[in-house]
Amino acid sequence: MPRLSPAVEAVLGGLRGRIRRYVWIEGLGAAAAWLAAAFWASLAIDWLFEPSREVRGMLLAAAAVVLAGVLFRLIGRRIFVPLTDGNMATLLERRFPHLDDSLLTSVTLTRRRAEDSGCDRRMLARTCREAERRLAAVTLPDVFNPMPLRRKVVLAACLAAAIAGLAVAAPETLDTWGRRNLLFSDELWPRKIRLEPVGFDEDRVAKVASGADFDLIVQAFRGDTELPVAPDSVEVRYRIEGGARGRHTMTRLGVGSASLEILQEYGYTFRGVLSPVRFDVVGGDVRLSDYQIQVVPNPTLTKVELEFAYPAYMDRPRRTVPVAGATQVPVGTRLTVHGRANKKLDSVRIECSAADKKGSRLRVLGGESLRPAAPGSPMPWNPWSATRPF
Figure 1 (cartoon, rainbow, N blue to C red):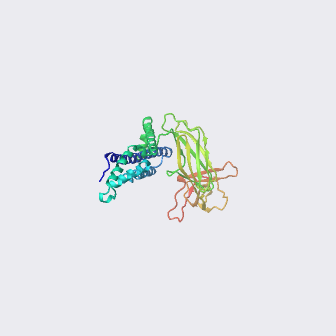
Figure 2: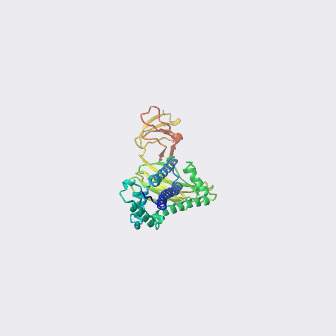
Figure 3: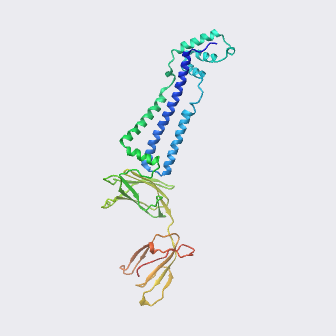
């Protein structure tokens, strides 16, 4: 039974090896391009938003999942597929029509047993020689379209070169990225300044009574540079729940402190807040994200009572009366105001008018002046007392 010549076997084996190498290079090139692109994307996100450790972990896990998918799709799913001589002959016949089925016929029939070939031996030998002759004009590189592979390799090389350039020009940036995104450190990126909204808790939330104005104050502090420079402008970008979006440049307030601890303050007033507001603050090289203004019902007082402790010269016993309108208070009386509030109070503003205007007083009480509720009270009590006689 005729056999394929060594030259034909070499061409088929060479094509098989080139296909395997193409698969490996394409897959590894795509994986390298993805890793480099994921690095630049995570660097930009981390520098702009400084997300929490949990968010950074999710981004790293997502990058790993995509990398595994790329490796499986471009390498794992293809590298173990059997590549027979028949497959190689079919590929060459399609790419080079001048072979005229001589190669595929030779490969197919020489792989059969003599009794199963169903053809004349001399005719098969002639076909094998014809296939070898025509195959001499075939160049294996022409089988492949090099452009997709070149694009992946060039893209991966450019992105990797950019990372290498960053490592040389700004190694501290690469170190900070590694500590934050691979070791999950909580250190912050170096900034020229630091911005901090006033009056927000650790969850970046502040509260305002429904319908009231909210004065947003942002303070600029010294950053990580020796010569701190306050930003020329600070912008607030907000989103009203169920409503509009907007952005405004905040107003500069004063000129900062002499000690440079606070470089500058900026302010903006949200008028008549009725719905929750989420906002970001952008200034200089800093962006503060996802701050919230929550709307709460206005506090109300019920069962307001006045407890009179009259001066000694009046020789009158202490008494408590409900508030039903304007109430006169004798001069020198120590007055305690009791009330029941629908929520915990931080402060109470008391305005006391006088007929001659000179005796008018404004008192803002808070802290120790707002004593806790009495034990066993059915509702929170927030009594308070003035510390000086009226």
